[in-house]
Image (cartoon, rainbow, N blue to C red):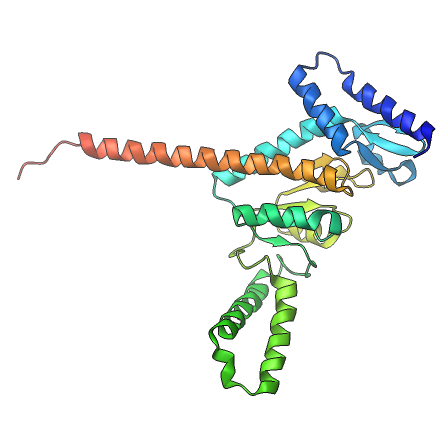
Length: 275
């Protein structure tokens, strides 16, 4: 990396930390964001006009995000996720690019949420009724193969069915747990997944997305301005969502416990009725 660019990056990083009345905890978070490369945007020539308020500086034609604005947006997104989880919502994760798919798949699997990490199939949400039938067929075909039910077919027919299962698995694996249209969608790189964003907007499903400098932040309900092409930047985004999901589940469990306790107490103090 040329020395002038390195100096510019160092300068912008130092300026990002020079915030008024910043508490030590916030400074540490900002340092973590800088280390993860969250602050790097695209070339200035690609910047969407609506993204301008989220840009802190431009150096050598590269945009740098205002990390304080990004952090504020992340907190809003986390609160939205937490509230959805408390209400028992289903979140669909979408990320098919190499730098994001592994981390997204790991996070979605951890909580049993549906995910699309191979290829977005048009109509995944807007034509869910038809899609769910294909998923059910894939599940049946998979069970039949594992249980030996396909042995009743000829060798040629088994080969055809196995190929069909492989094709369906490539398309639908990750969506088996999506029993209904999701209540929220998380997208990494909305430019690459514009069809998914369009379907969510059509169905009025709230979307959380890390949005780079070439994206209109107003196209997403909960935009988090930041680097959506680096593994470390994406990981920072996903770790924050993970903590919000865990917090939402804990609060939901605590609320359920209090409700159950109150019900038991009500039964205990209920006066007996004499016959």
